[in-house]
Length: 440
Image (tube, rainbow, N blue to C red; front, side, top):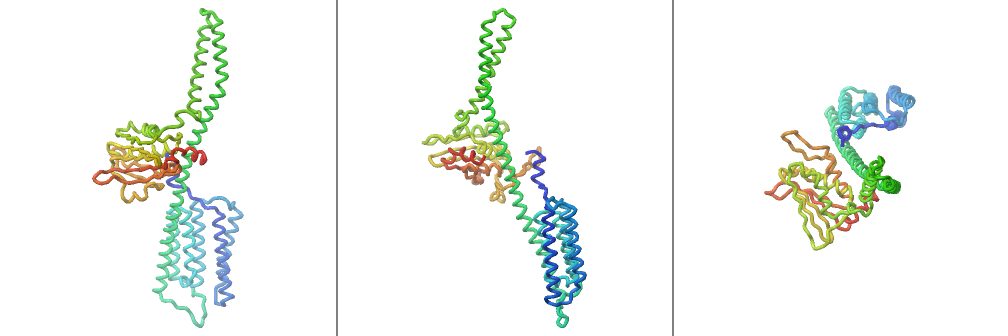
């Protein structure tokens, strides 16, 4: 993953459609209009109707102007969406000022715009809107017109009670917004991590398609190359050895023969029955281990020979990438050695990868394998190293798609180091190519 892609996953751009904000604003305007109508005509309380209707009309005019001037389907920049939500808060504050301030039970509607911001806007803008809503509520604590009520039996609430209402609004904004933000952020991270997994699978699928194209090209080119080779050989035999064309004809025949041999190798590697397409467990492990042997860490592979035949699997990029990524993490955190142990029986196939590093921290052990959770350590030459935390997530996802169960743990004291156990039902392991083909 490139640096640019990494930055995109760390800081995903968040955009809200204008139509979404406008729908919420229209809903708020209709609700406010209905409330004014019920209080003034249904309950017959004294209410500054004209100023309230003026604020509602201003909100409606803003909505109409936005619908006319812009495409409702366009996505707003976060700052623009935050400005519209702030306007919602200001309009609500104006209506509450005219109708009793925090004595009005609709004061808790301050939560709405902040919760919307928590689900769709960056943290900085969400906090800004929360502070703005809390400030408006604090101002209404001291400055407001009387609550519309029966003039013969007015409602007089103690100031300490109103302070409690303000604190409850403040706490509700903080707690609910934080919870909403965390839930939304986890869903967003999971979505991004799954997208990264799909990118890996797509790349592997493209490589498989290229392999098929290479086989098709080798097959199509084989006939004309054979014709060129035969004609060159016949002409070479008919030309005297001392002719100036003899050397050129010999070179033409040799190069045509070389092309035939190259295409033969491509056909052999790409054919469904090629020996490299089906590999025993030991060969699969060796292929996953080979790229990591030159990093100064001793990688010890132990294959426990069982009384039953060694399992054989179709060459599968998901297994190779998953095992290779977990092995790469072990090499990164090992001090001197990494062990790869494998065994099988008639029911299961198991690979255990362990290192002699610091192990997995207890607070991370239950969450390891989640997206954006990365093991980090200080390195003397490069400082803190570690990626986005997607590598283990992708590896675990790919392996579990093949039917494996992946578990993480630490060695038993006094030994130290992380242990990753990968277990397949043998039937799933030996037929994993079928599942991979369906998903591709």
